[in-house]
Amino acid sequence: MTTTETTTDTLRRILDYSSRADPYPLYAELRETPVARQRDGSYVVSTYREIAGLLHDPHLSSDIRNLARPMPAFEERTPSFIHLDPPEHDRLRRLAMRHFGPPHTPDLVAGLEPDLATTVDGLIDDLAGKEVVDIVDDLAYPFPVAVICHLLGVPREDEPRFHLWVNDIIDAAGYDPQTDPVEKLENGKQATKDLRQYLAGLLEQRHGKPGEDLLTRMANDDGPDGRMTDEQIVATANLLLIAGHETTVNLITNGMLTLLRHPDVLHRLREDPDLVVPLVEELLRYEPPVHIIPWRAAYSDIAVADTVIPKGAQVMLMLASGSRDPGRFHHPERFDPDRRDNQHLGFGSGIHNCFGSPLARRETQIALTELVRRLDRPQLVTDPPPYRRSPILRGPIHLEVAQGGG
Image 1 (cartoon, rainbow, N blue to C red):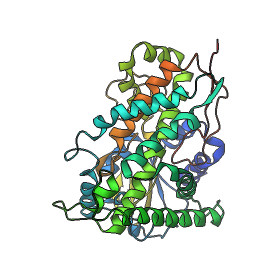
Image 2: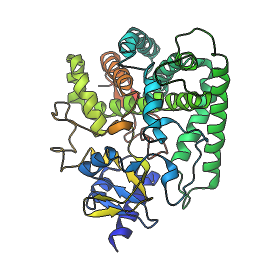
Image 3: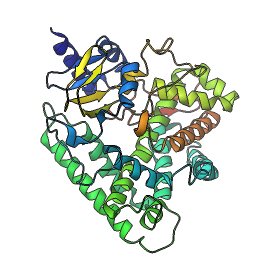
Image 4: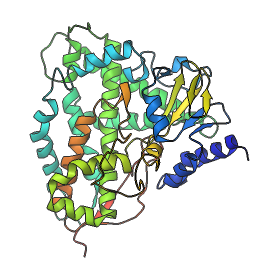
């Protein structure tokens, strides 16, 4: 086999659902060729130094229009800012950040903490007396959904509607025309259309009216960068609604799974709640919620390691592989909350570093601390648990935990 054939086969196995529970040995195989050309002409980058460099390289584009070979897409004609490049990316991100964090709203996350704690306490109260709980259904999903709905101004009772749309959108994000039925892509397109129409309806009600939710603020904001168009607000709200809960669901669930597999660390956290801060950073390295950035486009020829990626080529960044690169991290396969110099790729890096990472971190810190404190001698029911289909947003679809174990 040629190197291209070998790495293409390794990538295929990583993307296959049979590897979802443990893709890490395959990432190690992939790292043997840090920058690997695939049969279709795309490039996979799997080592920390090369990924980190590209995430900061202005010659790597997030705009699908810069791909030489068109790829299936279901994004509406107005993309969110994560699918744009500077200067438009920077302007739209600044407009959104005015209402989501520093410097204009520096106390947003801190101000939410009492409500976050109350929500988690209420969800865990409901687990009392249950012999088996599902960490996903009982806490990791409803908690961040409630938070992002509150922030955006989306009615919580509409969750069953957008839950189905979000699932189809995420499923279609990993669409492979070589192996997947076209219905997978079509369902993603329709779900994107339906979700944006829904958000546009909510936005229409916000113009000219006072309110503290993000939709209302964006609809009526006249800052130094101007105002977003309605289409741009809908695209931003679409991004925040999906990313605002999906990554956190995975982070909380992966975190609880990891703690149950490491009972010594679980015991430490119960005895020392302050451990949760470095622990969550190690989770972001060891079992991150986002494993892959499925595509970027080369603006021009880019020299990476010993390879030249040609202009227009699709580039896939294997974030989870980079965060377990032994060339960057000491004993990378070890879960170590005492790890120092933990510059992981769990939330990406560069100008597209995760917009909501401060909130996701705090939600996870609170959820894990309270779960460990209040669950009664938790034990895994099934290991490995069943996983979601997506290789991009990787996490268990259910995580059953028995209480009252020995």
